[in-house]
Length: 269
Image (cartoon, rainbow, N blue to C red; front, side, top):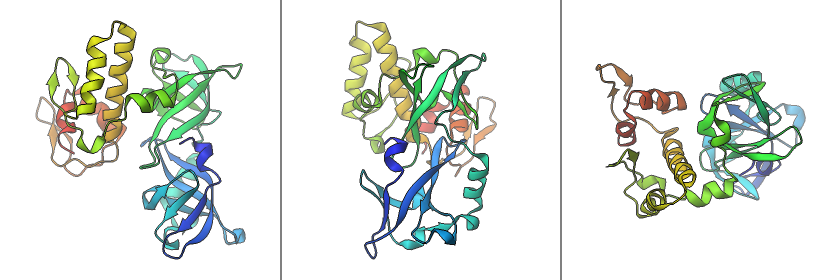
């Protein structure tokens, strides 16, 4: 869902079927590259700002956000982690996009949120004339900052035409995602992943193959985010790089990938 589609949604309690407020804004956790809280506007606004943690929602649909009960609604001043996110002020929309080499490639006009877990899957990039250049996958974003989004130097080669394209090519049932080895790619035992791999190996267009590989790998990374490691993972020197019980973040994925332990991590969550 686009962030604009979530803002303004009514929030309903399932227990009593009551509307308890409306989503006014989204609080972004830059380390997780995810929306952690919704700021909720309640009828009695003079009681102060309120928030609902995304992980306490039951469903986020095109018409409403559903929670079990009104207990999910918390006063902002009682949620230290939400206060911290407010103070950090990560907005994304209208943020300039800056490469590692210090080149501004445009700015963000919108971002997309996975309604199941709050993960930000992509950001819409526009040029100086407000023309859409493409979607920046969250995996290509190095830093979610207050003023800029820092990306890879070759970001133009990683842009997606649209989120519809992303969804169509990567509609894999992630709960059954597993890893095995076939050439140098991380694979999925699922039948639908075989279709993806067939596209990779049979396409006559090298750029299409590269694009499909990147999208497939991105889907696996997004599957990992927010899950917990079942065991310690060690690097080649025997040093523990992931502790049992660690919640998987983008930083952990990057560290594990650098150590050549990505497949092990996929099998261990």
